[in-house]
Image 1 (cartoon, rainbow, N blue to C red):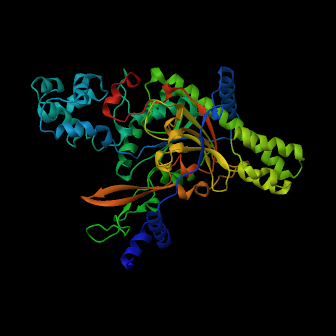
Image 2 (tube, rainbow, N blue to C red; image 1 turned 60 degrees about the vertical axis):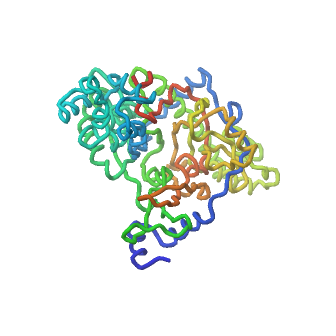
Length: 506
């Protein structure tokens, strides 16, 4: 099936022939659906802390940072292009009509002055068309305005990454989401006068990100009295997946070479694994708000981090007990309660286990990466949610599941999924070292059976694309997971350009 040229191409990507053959097998065989016990809810896997508990968690986080010797990193997946944000406006530019017709188009032009990029857009229009945005609109040349926003000779927003678009207006100039994440890092992730921020970016945009950081970083360092360590990484070619034809044979480009595609955000587990840190915040690039609304975000980021370090400390204490060999059955019962009640990890086999076997089981469940995930009340947004699901070893634990992992023919499962009370906004804080300070090797905790296959096309030809287990889904499947209810005010994603007109982005 593979030629010598194929083998050289595969090796050149840092992959092995065996890995590619395994990927082809996964495409042929497909992936099993997950077994679900229940949707998580408050009191059933989700913590809803009261004011006293929130204050205690915030204090725990402040204490942890002041102890010194702990490195905190804010990890922001930022490789996505913004093209999907502008789908409606691309459609308008290519439409067979010239004036705003859909509700979306009318809103965009009616409120165009509210966009943080308005001033830059009008400057581009003056350069390219000899007229301002308002003059072009007055003469009915709406398409010239949209084209100057989208296309390369204008702002090029149709091709830029979301992280570099102007999102929010301020008296001292507009800010990009990347800058908003720098500000957030100073407000809740900084320790010892330093804030560490890591962006995963595409190769094509790396230079643009570096340039923007270079231009802005000294301003934010002075504003917040903090030193930033900003780093970048790209998705590794070795994490790409082979594309196939609909008949499961390798898809080939016009030149005969194999086509490899990025394996989705699950590939970023490798980037996360390279981060030197004790605690890592993870949050999507577009989920940011202006300063006037940041208070909730800052408070709850500290709350979930405080819950994390509190739970981690207890897990570490129990691991030290187990490793010491000095414990009795009552102590084991206490540890079981922690694993089952606080970490929501249960197995039916515990009663049959001898103490020695029980210790092995408990140690395995305690000695692994830990994450606290903020979840918001479900308001009908597409995406995953918190569930109690079965693992490969028969235990049940908390997981974030996407619809693609659930058997839509199973009426009971679909009722759980559609009736779920909470939603995953991608608001995580992670502990990635063991109790001896050694980093966990994160790829060891991925559930390889939780990928999925999607239909795509290239140059008009259909293909099958293999997606790796998602970063916060299967890639973290074998982590200890805690869900904390956070307010909806902390979740303000930008999926379309008109989302920037919402109050949360003004």
